[in-house]
Image 1 (cartoon, rainbow, N blue to C red):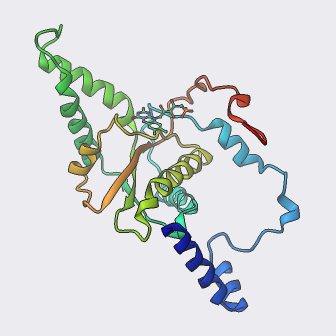
Image 2 (cartoon, rainbow, N blue to C red):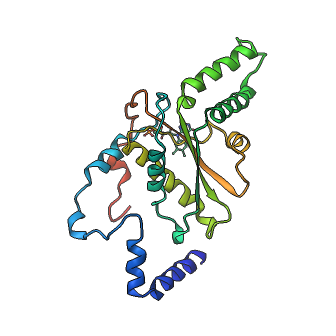
Image 3 (cartoon, rainbow, N blue to C red):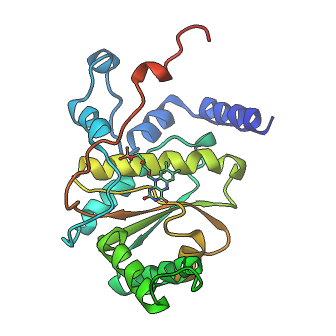
Length: 237
Ligand SMILES: Cc1cc2nc3c(=O)[nH]c(=O)nc-3n(C[C@H](O)[C@H](O)[C@H](O)COP(=O)(O)O)c2cc1C
């Protein structure tokens, strides 16, 4: 009902615009001019086609820094994702400060220490913590940048944020790959409690994911994927 309501309102709003206003609002969009349909139907854009195939979850990075303009470009692509009623409920929290990244890493180590059991452990607590620290610092935390994708609980149609959030994250991962950067959609590996505390994320935001962003040490091979036919149902189940 709620969705039907906002769709009707969206149509009414669009309907109430004059043609001139409509042209203006479309042409003021970042994507510029309308694209003639005949030129694109059925023709894959070669770059994006490669990007779909080549995006991989990356968990080890070179420490090359990333120009701010690239980060902005990636977020600019992410914000083009579709949203319910065009509500665009996101925030993209960018972390470049090494001290903050290290703080997140230490909080991950502390959080993972709950798995340490002195009764069964073959290492001391300190050794276990050091091993964790090395795994994290050689892995996710080798990245020079992190982006936290968030949705605003106070957005117009907050019930739809659980669709809108991951869509933007998906765009972000692809946009990063298009520029040659690796990412990984992280949930549990960097617990939400860590980002909430260390990054002081206000309560009104819900974390969709956090991703490191950086130049991969290498592009991982494609993990086993199901066969294409397993996904497709045509006309009837
Ligand atoms: C909802 C979701 C949660 C994920 N959580 C994690 C995570 O916590 N840590 C991690 O390293 N990768 C995580 N991943 C990445 C997946 O492991 C990865 O996408 C999958 O293995 C396929 O590999 P590919 O992305 O290279 O195709 C997550 C992905 C999704 C979509």
